[in-house]
Image: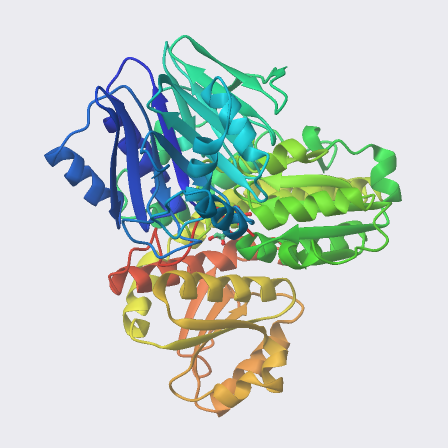
Length: 608
Ligand code: G6P
């Protein structure tokens, strides 16, 4: 969703705020703005559109001051125009607020404030915060922010500055991530660590309910009763190179190509060859927990949900535990049954997706133990879970998730193996699996070698309006993921379906204008998938088949055949998805779209 940056220190704030916003632009990109404490009070600059426009505006008409806040927006309330861009101010223009999240009772508050004479100029929910703070009593900005927040229902990560207290930023969190960056006599605020990485590696993650007060001499964290809270300073393990584009034209392509290395990172130190199992120190499950596990519930959204579907096959096949995979947004509003004795796994790249976080909380409240499969270290889901597995895939900047997906499946393979070894998988079979997993990064590198072929193929499909992705078994989730990649970034309508289900509806759509992409690696259902291809062929559909090397030549049946290295079936999604990621990428790039920032989407969905 939206991105927040704040700076207080000896340097000029505006360039630091703009650089931070640029790092966060992948989170939201319909408008942006800054508010800086200048000699003449608060100065605001806001613009609709990308950060680039704001940079030009500030270049022409600079704002000088060493304390400020900034925001890049993904609209929830109100159109994405300049007026609705953050920061928002009170009636006097003396208080400026940037906010992520949703103020659910904004309409009620607005009516009440308007009745008291407050004048609103935007359609946003955030503006109510500025007026509430203006209205609140208290000796300090933080006391007024606390008083204002007592009226607020909903979620927020926010930063506030006020002309009356020029060397201070007040930050508050409930439900939307905010962290503090601690530098040499300078302090930062950010919704995401990548915005502060070039200045400091020391960060303080705020918890829900925290209020942080930053001044020139330090920072402190308090609760709503102004009691001081101790929050540890964490060291970031990302480096700048990971968030730089380097030789690539887009982050998405960089992240696709990085997969051999990111898979290696997910596996690093976790393969125990002699014991035929995985080392998962953070899992926090006893051998007894693993043995007695009655059921697993996976909650996730988007690509992570697809990884969860593949995880169901993996865990059921290896460990024999029944697995249920739920859209987090649906699960959180159901009455979950039979949760005591179950293990809930929240899968999330960002660790901040609001629905996944709430599903985790609902599962815990219903009596389940909860673990996270998360990429971003220190994220809310990672901190709230009882244990978990970090992906260590490094920052994922492209809005369409790629490397996180393959690392999520790899982490679930490690988990499946670990559980299985406690539940009767033999040492020999465990060792075999460890050997297979160790080869995965090399196999991914081999799968990437056909990029040239895929790019040429993309050229022939660049004008399509629809596409159908079909797969069976563990490759059905890959069909869903391939379709999601295409629709997200190229805006071509695409659907993923279980190949045999095609006969129950989608087959009506098949003609020469409907490309059908089949996932057909060599596995137990391969002959069945071939039959499904024949059904498409008989109706004039054009077929692209993703097969494993050694599957034989399918010319005559399919129009294009792309082959990935052969692998055991449970590992195959990590490989078969790679051509689909590249296919979607090249089509979108050829169409001239902003691949890393597709329209209407956000990388991390921190509102419901
Ligand atoms: C958004 C992103 C997707 C992502 C989903 C879940 O929709 O655009 O790429 O898969 O959120 O995000 P998470 O961070 O929880 O994996």
